[in-house]
Image 1 (cartoon, rainbow over the protein chains, first blue to last red):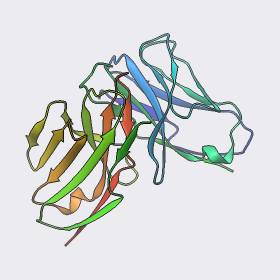
Image 2: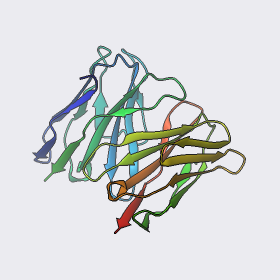
Image 3: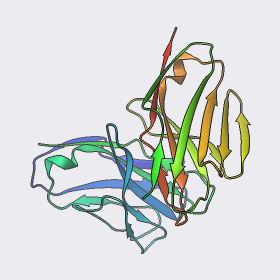
Image 4: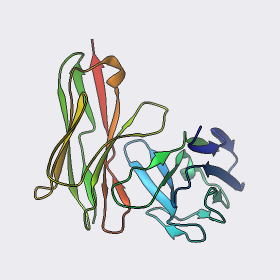
Length: 113
Length: 109
């Protein structure tokens, strides 16, 4: 089934630890995005990639890094987790042109303790 | 700055009609999206407007006025399964989506 898959679905992480959230899509979409969603704040863009080999910073990039080695994969890394990074993380993809919707993964619920 | 405003929460009755408003101020405009998000799930696409007017899709309709920076989502014949959050998002001049905080819609029998 075509779509976008995230792993893990949930994680409890000790502060200071490194963590990579995985995201894979099989729709051959050019653009991919990482959002965090916190109560009352809506979706906030962390990083994005308009095409394989390129990445850009979103609204809240500090403490996060991404890579886009190929079209399908867009991992998000927390180098040293802090409690304020407790959130639900969504990966999304689109074909990157105006007017086309973004498709979302099922989300990763991350708790940093 | 860029801003999307929508009500935090609305309540409606099963079988009724509800209108969820969204106002926006963004740097450029390349369309407005509505998404539905059930609790604990991912957002799913509902509608897209880029020209002024009404787009109808079954029980759901979405309206856009670019001059007023305004959109609404109209849900008819409400069903209990429509209980969800509804997210308004605008695509700016860089083709990035700017998201509202979402409107939680509660449907009562």
